[in-house]
Image 1 (tube, one colour):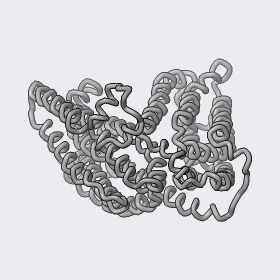
Image 2 (cartoon, helix red, strand yellow):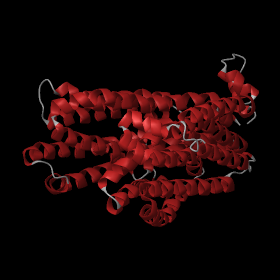
Image 3 (cartoon, helix red, strand yellow):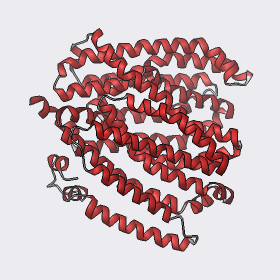
Amino acid sequence: MIAVKTTSHLTSGRLLAHNTVWNLIGQLLPMAAGIVCVPALVNGLGVARFGVLSLAWIVIGYFSLFDLGIGRALTKLVADKLGAGEEETISPLVWTSLLLMLLMGVMAGLITLGISHWLVERALKVPAELQRETLHGFYLLAASIPMVTVTAGLRGILEAQQRFALTNAIRVPMSIFSFAGPLLALPFSHGLVPVIIILVAGRLAGLVAHILACFHAMPILRHNISVQASEIGPLLNFGSWITLTNILGPVVSYVDRFLIGALISVSAVAYYTTPLDVVSRITVIPGALAGVLFPAFAISLTQDPKHTSLLLGRALKYILIITYPIMLVTVCLAPEMLRLWLGPVFAHNSSNVMRWLAAGVFVNCFALVPVAFVQGANRPDISAKLYLLELPLYVGMIWVLTKHWGIEGAAIAWGIRVTMDAMLLFYFTYKLLPNKPTFLPKLAITVSGGLLMLYLSTLPQSLMIRGVFLCVSLTAFGLMSWFRGLGLVERRFLLGSKSVSVTNLSEGQL
């Protein structure tokens, strides 16, 4: 019982809400920094060198995949031990994981060193005058891979303890430095090597900051340094499925673009990807929430399965309340938004595409929560197996629908895929929940009704009629959300009532 008392706060509603906000800040501030810094970098480095720098950002950002999912597995297993009150066994798990990630990072670095010449001289078609400095830059990046993989593991330790404020306090400066840091080199040099040295130095500083943060958050790590071979099996078993998911995910996400380019034209790809990139931005909201819920699910499944259902239901409800108005405005005003932003040609070619994709994104926002749940329930294989099932079906749908209806057909195929994915994820979530919730059928009915309203918003040709429809719909949705969707405790909390305790917020009615 003592363990439950000391860790139950890790699943409290107030803490999870605060951590979700921190995650949003951690994603939005670096985006703003990129908008500010990129024009100066393009002017200072030139287009060719900036292109190489862009590749460097991608390499640094995605080298964490070389941990074979152990970082995610570490978050899950540490959360399990916290929920079970087995804090004394966490240290061997952590050090075993970090050692594995270091070894994998070294191997990945050596592989990158070995293929650097091929990448620079053949695969990437780097201009001859830039090949030497690009090659040296790739050598530096290869040396940084172990730092990046170990940092991912250290971040997982903090996330298992719901220390998202601390992780984002490190991540935000690191991410901003990735854009702003290279500007420091421009007064002295316009070469790539000094710029990449600065990026690698930033990653080293981030590694040190994460080590100090972990020692502060979990002091036992400083005094009980040991490695246990028995921890390797569970880490690799969980991590291998995460890795497969991470490999298949981008394939499923980008195959539509390649097929559109092959079946129609490269110009059609632009008319398709531009609205998709815009409407997909909304997923940062459920993504921030899902990142917080993953360790919370692992803990609550161990301590209080009933509370797990409460967390799941509240998360889905808040996603509905936040995302639906945004999607309704997007679908209703898609032609006008595209015309103002990109001109009449884009509006003519992409308006219907944007509407179909927005409807799909609306459904996809809900799917991020069951993904976090099934992984928290120690079933990371579900996401990977669903990708394996969906990929051939999706390719076939894109091929047929694009042949008949062009990029609008591709958008329809994308929407069908994400809807099918969400339905299957919710099916497995229902099967894995110890206490079968009653809110999932209600959610299905509500989302179906929301999709119907999205469709109805596209029928009027007159902007004035659509504007009236939009105002009436948003007002009705707002009133229903406030009086029927939110409970009394939630309304008091949102109004800033001091009488609402963490316990009340966590245990209020759905």
